[in-house]
Length: 136
Length: 136
Length: 136
Length: 136
Image (cartoon, rainbow over all chains, first blue to last red; front, side, top):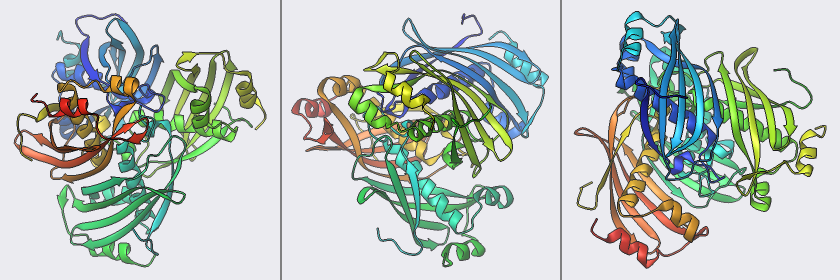
């Protein structure tokens, strides 16, 4: 992925909870790390996801994801999650994400989330689209 | 703990998700296993926890727990969770639980759950108390 | 996916540990469910993954995955994980997997694992390939 | 618990991964948060737990824990984990820990870890005891 002014960064420390008996970070742990990255991307843009859910019944749910695991990661590693939206259209926000350790890319992902209101897919409300696409 | 006619048993297989880089089962995984055991104890007694939450706003929340870890557990182990209530009183259900592997006791726990209705602590409704204390 | 004689099935119960505050199963939980399915597919074919790791230094690590989430899943749901290999070649085993609830498909995945020996990618040893491709 | 010069602090953000369908933080998530706190306490004192495990075969394993859950926690909460050792003796390090949100105490724990070398309980090596009890 490329990074631009709309890319957010989040540092993530690897704890025992993230590893498995192979001695490496468990593959599902990256899925959690990528979500932390998207959550921080939203926070930087002013979203309060708790209030959105409680006040307007709006949640973003993952509809599809693809991850390539390029390097192992290990206990105590300090990883960085990079998050960049690639499309905001209809009900869908698409993201390109990457986990890096220093200069190395550890994993790459493309992820599509859909907007749910009271459990049903809806177009992203216009104010939220504006909030997502405004220059940070 | 002792077992009696009100004890339920649940088999749990250890997968990679449950282990950590020490090569053993991660200590928080047992907390999940114990909850699976309590959920199955409720199911055996006719509780539908999804319907209770959706229909009556009632959930059981853990208020306190104490666990002793006696043996390590490892990938692919087949563990058994034993669950027995020790008190049903006011808002609280207390459980004695144990995880065994064959003849060995791997971990023991005492756990208190409280009854929440719409997020607030309430006395356990009488019909639920009856359901919990009826002979299975 | 299609199912055939090489497809294995595993039932998975949804517990609170698998859900999130949206009220649905958390998207990373499916990644764990899919792995349980692959582990059971291996077990049915006679693999002892604990002994493989301890005795021969061999582990299977996820190299890539793609998941489509088609329906929500909820607390107490009984899901079935279907697992079928689509290729065993070089260092890689590719799987097609599906999670169903009764007649509904909840999620679909394609997953590639690579064979590591002492942490390095190796061709799958011939005896293991034979074990994977033998008629179950 | 009281805090003193040997208390370390770690901020933890609540993500969807930490919540469950009751809308609150899942009770086992606190167990992970407490461990992050102990890991940071060790890091502050100069421990490299990855190197300890790889180079000397030493890991710290939880032997017992007791947690009291006092308040619910919710998506997006910023929690602080406070960690203070109460005893370093023989093979055991005992900790008093607390999770707070602003002025509120959300959960309290006492936790005992034992020192394992190559999987067996050993007295804490003298250099590590010194490292733990030195003024930070």
